[in-house]
Image 1 (cartoon, helix red, strand yellow):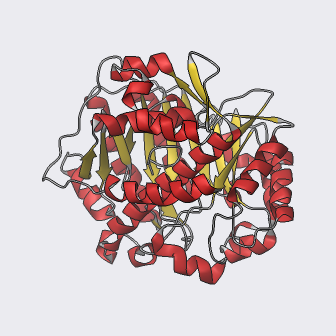
Image 2 (tube, helix red, strand yellow):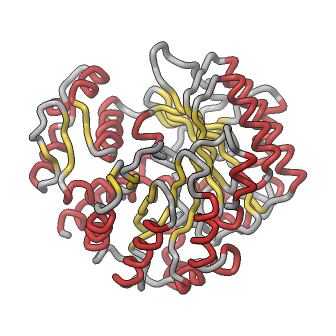
Image 3 (spheres, helix red, strand yellow):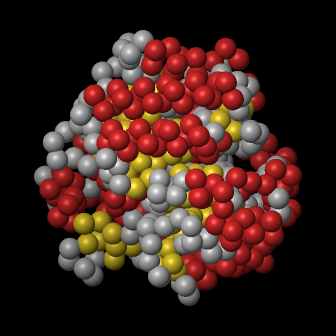
Length: 444
């Protein structure tokens, strides 16, 4: 698609500066503003085996280090409560948040005690998805999300998941075993894999739809510059020549039993919680090593070093390594992106937030998407997306994630074995296991 070919390089140029942090000594972490709603994100950066393509802050699991880390997390929770924050929703990302279930449960219970949290989302891997896990988290976790990526045996082998998580049939059995045990069970699938034929994608769509999951999220393949070469050697050359056709196929096939809730998430029509927190909550506080916070137009980034994180918490200070403040115009762009990614921009809400109508705040952006037939203005209260517009906003989110992943890659390059476990193995990474900094799994 011509508009995608223009948009992709433009966004890569724009995002190059977006994640250049300003390191100016000790950074003051702000308290909450009256009347604002915030979401809480907690990052658990440990995995039993490190995927060679994942760029989230994660380290090889060692029990002693992980238990000490959870203790530090709980201290950071108390620090955050002392600032006066309250949260309705909490999201655990990783890594693998369920890797130490007893520590996770203790942390959940403390968070609920401190903040009165009403609903909690959590990620896990297919090998940990079983009824015993669901039973222990009953009453604590309402939304569970599992990274499947594909049910195709060849693709799973190429991305080093087959040996660890089993083939598509085994993964399906695990999903079925917990279906109905959470208020929302989300399955993540990736499309636009090199060599992923139409038949393979159709099978992934069919398997996901029959898995019993209440929500399916289809992420486009995201490949920062650091992994282009390694991806070429494992799965093939990444292009976007068929991405639009793949996306339209997903829209077509999912329409039978699911309703689209965001640009890439689909929820069953029988209801249930939607696992897409950023659509409802623009600002959030991120806790843990490598976590991001977005507050009043500024991103705050916690240190990626486990050692520095533990030392900061022990000294009673926030573990923030840098921040980046955004202009009012860029804040408008972010609001525009997130609202339309959630399939509708509320005109009144935009005006209340920024003091101007969206047409005056973002005239060039609206003109671009209007010319490309991306926006539907038929509802005077809400701007929505056409089918083409939905795809272009998926492209924008894809490039947004890639920009964040490239920042993560840069932040991790300076890590040494003293900063955590197996740090050198994590430096060259990409982001196939999405979740999630700003939109879902983006804060990790």
